Image (cartoon, rainbow, N blue to C red; front, side, top):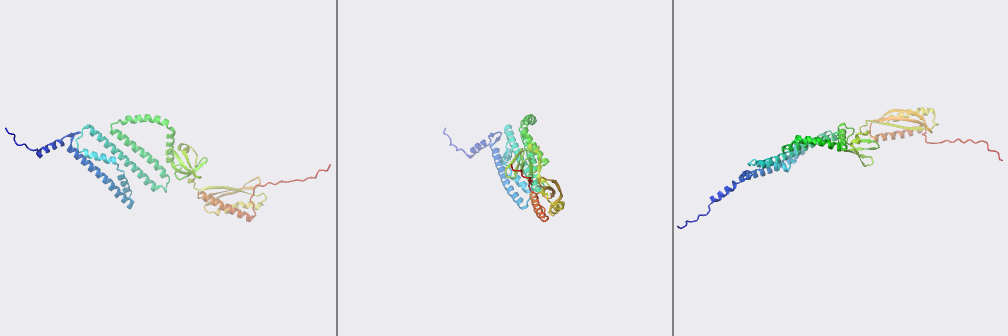
Length: 373
């Protein structure tokens, strides 16, 4: 029996082969579902990248034109959208087209949850920084301590925020957070004992921030050291001395020291003295307190207190004068004292009163010369 004509493979056979390949299962889903998932993930990631760039540019421009704090905040939030968060959201969007097995689904869910938590932490960190900067910019002129106080509160806020993020992330991974916290509490006691000096400085910094014995910009004197406060950190406080070098103090030592804050001086008490010669006539001696009073009261921003003949010195009759300068600036005080000294010299010259200076008088008594032998 002769063989019949051989048929060429038709398109239907290729279609059957293709349909068979698409029906193959990978982790519980066929290739068609994986293709749809990949397309959805790429589309979601592209849309988020475009949205981040567009929102950042538009909101930043609006904030610059109008000065809107809300626009600046949302522009910052858009620019803080992280790459890993976009990938996690894209992967989650694509997974909705898949029928995943239990293990891959759990791994993907944990990865997405961690990415979302970290992104929330990044946004929260940006929000704290924005609120601190806005508050300080509004109040720094009226209250210079605002910068120091809010910086410390910002550190505490960030510490609390990231602690919550870590604990929630561990809980999402199935870790027993309660037992972990209890273990950290026991370990924290040992760490606290080992780091008691560091922790003492840390709590001292919070005491300085809350009680505000000094703030950034104040001129203070601690023992024999003096300078302007430049930085209040978690462990040390730094001063810039008058001679230019930086002075670094431990917060614990600084809090236990006696600090003189000259920035908060409302007025400056000035005390000075002078001496006149012993041969000054009594009338001129009696007139000196009145002359000094007139000179002091003629100056601006000065309140006269007293002028007295204080004591008999070794070579001078001593006077003491006290007055107050209502401007606490040291330069104003020195200008005032200089003007008073010059006027005293002029007025005393008019009255024939002489300032005393160290002298010694020798009295030589000559008797009869001895007889020659």
